[in-house]
Image 1 (tube, helix red, strand yellow):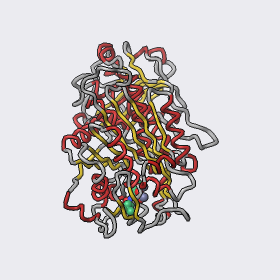
Image 2: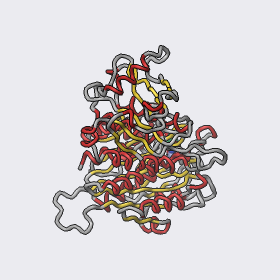
Image 3: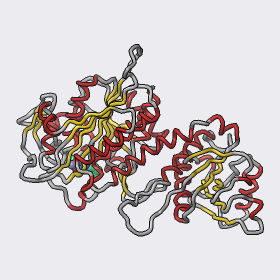
Image 4: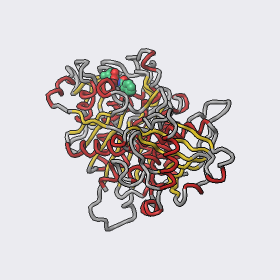
Length: 500
Ligand code: BES
Ligand code: ZN
Ligand code: ZN
């Protein structure tokens, strides 16, 4: 649980009090916290550099003076360089250390107004986020001894700041729970989340919220002419699905002016073996994460419902398993998508774009959205271009791309705007069908994938976010464990809140 506390720091009963220390200046104005910082400064091996930590225990004879059992000093580096991401990282790291010690709670002192380049409210958001997300452990599948997350995490700040941000802790907790939900789906092993089960799991989570849902099964997909989703799903014993999650605050309301609808589409490939164009064993190992877009979209919808978001948002989530088998689709196949266009299969491993176009074209027709965003672990090429921490944003609508990039800055879920050059479109030409799902060159693969999608969205303002890099990490980060990162939930919630 997240909360604010204020009053005298000496009365804060806690297993661990965290005091933040810059290399160059004290960041507090509370005399008692300043006094604590000065204690740390007397100890030479602690400099306040980023990564630097110092853990002190209250000596029994001093114990009555301070209600905290431990004080953890954590370095922030140079004052002018401290940004929200620094605070998320530091908070996450402190929480992880305390989990290792099996503690139940901690209190972090928030830097005072005008001491950092960011406001106390920005600092509070970042500290809450880093601490909450760092407190998530995924060890469901481990027998033996387990890490136990902290029960409460409090921020110590002055009473006025706390009062002005009364609603903040609950809001951040709701949003970060969305991230954690997405993480757990992504980290789940692929044998436990084949399409039918993964969809049921998303429905089960949605049922508890103010969301309506429908599931198109194989038969309905066929009746609707969704040849692309069906082709990709054909090789698996577990048949494809299209899940629709509808958050509609206009329902049962007659006179709402300026109705607005946003559609979110998420790639849900529960395991991407590559299909008949089988991946090498090295690149197949992490392909349980190929449903990260779906996980983030579903978790975003659930979060928006909990936050009572202002306008209608519909999640359209195609879910398949891409497997080779006697029934699998083949290179050379020509399939017909929902909108009637024919596609020659150049490569069965370029399956994400296929399931997305049926979903995009269907969503566009059924919901006539004002804006449409898809999120997908779409290309290895995007990881080559931007690395493992930054997502690529593709949109012909510059304003839309800019707003997404801005939300990336605010949340630390970084995005970079990429081009959608018209003159690359001929790279997707097919001799036999309207389009090929594979580019004729191996260069610019993230761009050609996005251009392929763009052929199926008509004039609706649309953006594609390629999260192949940041969706998953083999190694733990500062406020994320190894596995799914839940990337995209905080980004989309921030973006959509900004559009309200
Ligand atoms: N799921 C992969 C993309 C991917 C790669 C995600 C690495 C996360 C990490 C996607 O379906 C894929 O296989 N794309 C191919 C496209 C190619 C065949 C045109 C790729 O990127 O190599
Ligand atoms: Zn693939
Ligand atoms: Zn894939």
